Amino acid sequence: MTRLRSLLVAILVGSGLAIAAQAAPGNSLRVQIVDERGMPVRDAVVELASSRSPAGPIRFPWRMAMAQKDQQFVPGTLVIARGSTVAFPNLDRVRHSVYSFSKPARFTIDLYGRDQTRTQNFPIAGTVALGCNIHDAMRGYIRVTDTPFAGKTDANGYVALGNIPAGTANLTVWHPRLRAPGNETSKGVTIAAGAQSRRLGVRLR
Ligand SMILES: [Cu+2]
Image 1 (tube, protein in one colour):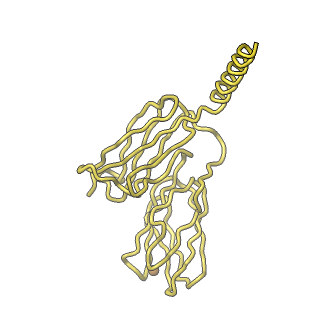
Image 2 (cartoon, protein in one colour):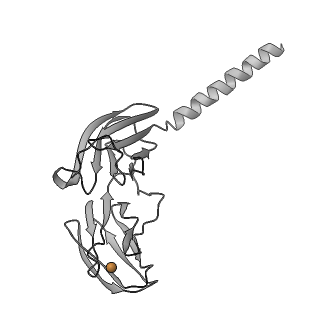
Image 3 (cartoon, protein in one colour):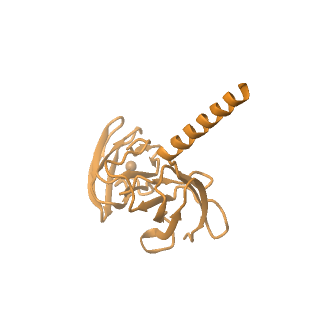
């Protein structure tokens, strides 16, 4: 009797897990970007576009901010959803400006000082290269995306995309030094159920 009861409990627990797994498929894709020599590429933006993407506003867990610190744009490369407003806090003692000549967002924010901030909205998807009128070496990039399945690679070239729909999708990789039109390359991928990983080679300048 005890054995029967434990068997019943095992069946109930097992079916419960199966139902939970069906309700939240949790397909994930871990991508590593490497260059021609097999070295990891850091700060590459990876976007997965699927026709089965969920509707509604896209929210990323990181801050929609590009600071100016030690005469650099920080974090240097920022992924945002189309329509987002980005803050540009100046954390330096010197004054900075922000400008872009890029097609998705041509704008100039005049010089502003320490502990001041300015904001800019980005209604068009694409790549926005940032500069400062005073410091020519300052370079920053905002990648404005239309998909919730996006991120940038870490120091080891890895990025993880979670809760992605199974089926066919398009994977785009962008990096400021990627040797391709628009500094980006795309390929079709098929997303299976569960966790999967891919390693993609790119050519850099
Ligand atoms: Cu500056």
